[in-house]
Image (cartoon, rainbow, N blue to C red; front, side, top):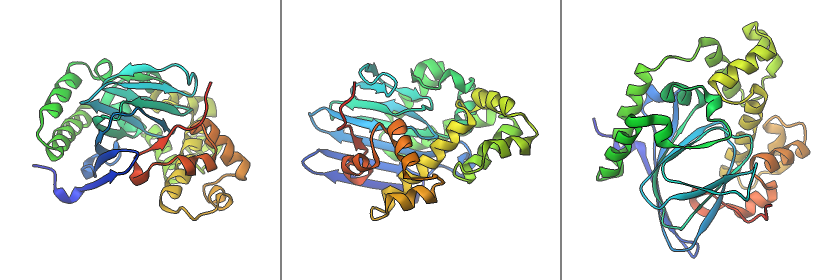
Length: 293
């Protein structure tokens, strides 16, 4: 059945920076362990827009209807590659996206468990990489792109996507219960459970836990824990602009503000103060204003 309009949220923005429209959709409850959200995005303008994409514990997928994107990452910030529709594996550093200001795309964000089951490949093959969507999904992905591109509105596009994802999950080989438990524990605690305690719960060595995470999640448990803590900070700063950084750091499980600054530099390519200055209005990203090599 069609997507219920009550599941949609529309945000529109117009300023000197540009004009854009963002439509968010809450996924079907059956997809909760696998998909965090869907987003439709349209941006009108002629100026080049360069954004920083923070490292987060998700696997974003872009189905592109507009001009190709120039994409790079913090490992080699001066190297930009062109992509249409793509999958971004989880990163241990930030990424850079650049477009002409005339963007039009659908994005859906997968959990690591969701990406493992929907793509059906070991997640270390995607880690620290941006890969064309067709290379990951093959013919099924090409057919999905065509159907979504030909749809007349966002409700129809989200409905097509959702039916596709539900079918993929139903046919997928499930991630082991132990890895699923470990991911859930890390996620539910915001990355605050020690990796050693997690290994003890599973009666695994830390080496075996790291190996299984590389296969089914994509990054080491310690890195995932840091990303989850970092995400708590970013999410809080999105909703509470008056909060003090020292307080935010402690609440998210950081020992002190210095550790928070270290993670900001690695995962965002900027300091917390630069983050506050660089955010665009209405949740449309973070402008890259920091000089890079």
